[in-house]
Length: 89
Image (cartoon, rainbow, N blue to C red; front, side, top):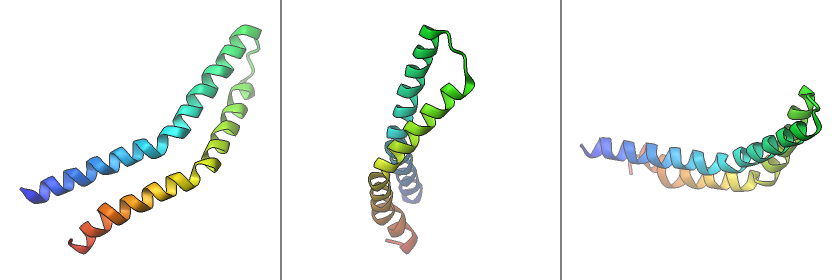
């Protein structure tokens, strides 16, 4: 019974870390998509590259800025949760 509880606790923590790590990129994609969609609706410009290029640029910029946060979060998760499970601690 305790083996299952440890497994589910590790899975819960892993999923929560995935949400935390992906939140900045998803939030910027949402905001830039809404902004570009609003701009297209107001100006009646229906260009496909207008939706793709600014969103991609914003995502890349946020990824570059938050890369240290993402890597430190994942490293701490692995050091505190996954590696002790593998080592048997």
